[in-house]
Image 1 (cartoon, rainbow, N blue to C red):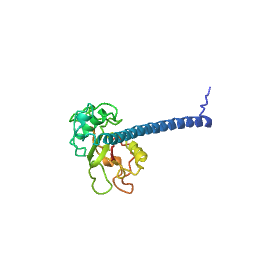
Image 2 (cartoon, helix red, strand yellow; image 1 turned 180 degrees about the horizontal axis):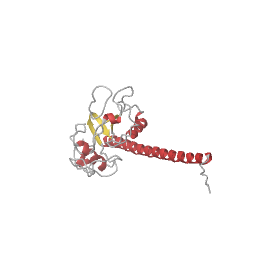
Image 3 (spheres, rainbow, N blue to C red; image 1 turned 90 degrees about the vertical axis):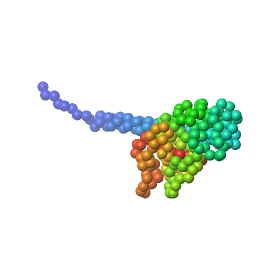
Image 4 (cartoon, rainbow, N blue to C red; image 1 turned 135 degrees about the vertical axis):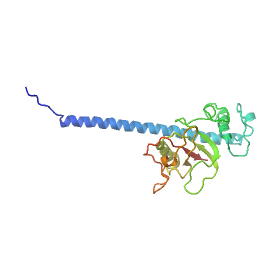
Length: 222
């Protein structure tokens, strides 16, 4: 007996294509939702740290980390700063001791001259964050000048920073505004500028959001 092999009908093929389309759409939508959640998480951290910084300054008339009377006026604080109005050197570690013991951030961080998970909070990708007075951020032209800034830490996917830029700084890229690219290492491999934003050409300064780069970082200027 001769068997005739029957192929798929157009209806069956159409159904399969619809199913594949739905699966791909669901995957892409899921990735979009995950990225959005990560952006919100990081944005909340940034806004929380900024609020803590200014709240501490308002209460104590001094900067966290730099406060030279912290051990007597902030219950539980273990390290004083020099009170010169700038968060320099290891005062950037004392920042978290002062803010946590004053109740401005969650968790308890105790000063030690070396950064660790017990002295310094981390971003959602386990890169250590930093609040300091320095020039470790990029500018569009010329040389960066020292100023107080909050470092997000490294290991952040570039698409998250691109969306964060749009959310809190108008999306003007890595070289302008209050959010800039920073190569701060934060206990990990330092981000590479050319992997995170366009360093030349017509799109200079724009985040390379489609590159898939997983190790970028930023500084938010105060």
